[in-house]
Structure formats: structure tokens, C-alpha cells
Length: 262
Image (tube, rainbow, N blue to C red; front, side, top):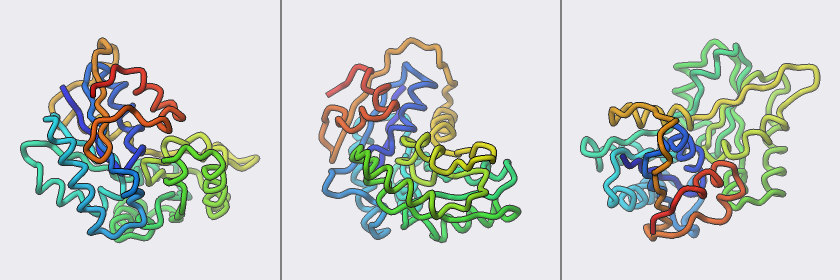
């Protein structure tokens, strides 16, 4: 079994690690864009679609059983084009912000996302469909995905603090509307926590997306399976080692311990 994941950069690590935990025997193909073409968050829909198709084609060339679009921005702008290009031969699984499960805590809810996704018709439709009964605040997080991509500790702290300052003090849940943010989830939790109030629940998409990919190909989770899966890393279509910045995160360390394929 082989699962491919695509993103502009390191945001795919969270979903890749989730697949790895569910199926340690699965081979993984991690396909991202060349650094000079990222991030995708501030780009036009046409730009994102064109680059998402290129990154997906590089992954599809390795004949995976499923392709996870581990990027909220690409799912917003490029998912129809990706499905038209590859399905039904290759199942394509998009990433949807975890708005629906977040409202279970009763609100208020904040949605942290890139400036491009914040306020987008796509996100507004999800809010209208799943969160009409609670107060929702959309929080743009300029610079946070970039900072995570570069493992820039100072920039991460600055961007998280700025977004936390725009987040209502009484929120009970924060939706991580960019896959990069899941790599710094504990920093976000600490930043939005308020003395005297219950801990804020965070809702990412990695686990649900990984489980959906397995369902689409008829595979069952087998977390106790032998760790035989290999990892192939593609950047701009070229086979490379796992980028050093990935090793700043537990998810990257998990994948870095898997035998690489060049």
C-alpha cells in the first residue's frame, strides 16, 4: 500500500505522521513545491491550482493508491481540478477545516487560517452549514505558515502571539485551518489559554484525513503492524532527503526515522 500526500511545503507532515501511526507498513510519498514557489496562502486561485496540479503529478508518477491534499489552501482552490485530473483511477482526499466537530463544545469558536482562506466563500459555507448555532470568529494568521515552514522559532512565537491577541478571550475551541498550524498546536494552545477558564480545545484535520484515505482504498487501520513502510520525499518533483526544518517537529522526527527512498 502506498499513500501520497501533497502540500506547498511542510504542512503535509501532520497528515503523513497520522497515516504512519495508523499504518506503519504503508509506503509514503511526500510531494511539495519548490521553495521559490511557496507559500500558497497569499497566491491567486489560478496560481495555487497550477502548482497543486504540478505537485500532484509528481506524486502520481509514483503510482500511489490514494492522494491526500494535505493543504487547506489547495483544497479550497484546486480540489475540483485535482479530482478531474486523477479520479477515478486515483482517489483524491481533500482537507476540510474541522469546523463541524469543533462546535460540539458549544462555542465560542475561533478559526485560525491563512489570510487567503479567512473570509473565503468556502470557509463561510462551512461555517453556515455546521456552526450557525455558535459564535465563530475568523482569525487570519499572516506569516504563521511561513514561520512554521522555516522552523523559525522567533517568527512562530510572534505570529502565534499576534493571532492569539485577535482571538476572543472566551473561546472554547480553536480550529486549525491550515495544516502547517498543526505542527505548533501546543504553542497555540498555550497562547490562547486564559487563567481561570477551561483549556481550549484544538481541532485539526490530520487524523480524520488519514482515516478517510484508508477508507477510500478499503484498508483498515493496523497501528500494530510491522514498521516496514518507506518514505519518498519530492520537492519540486525531485527526490530529496527530508528537509532539515521538518526535524524541528515531532511529526518530522517520526517520518525521519523511517527508511527513506531516493
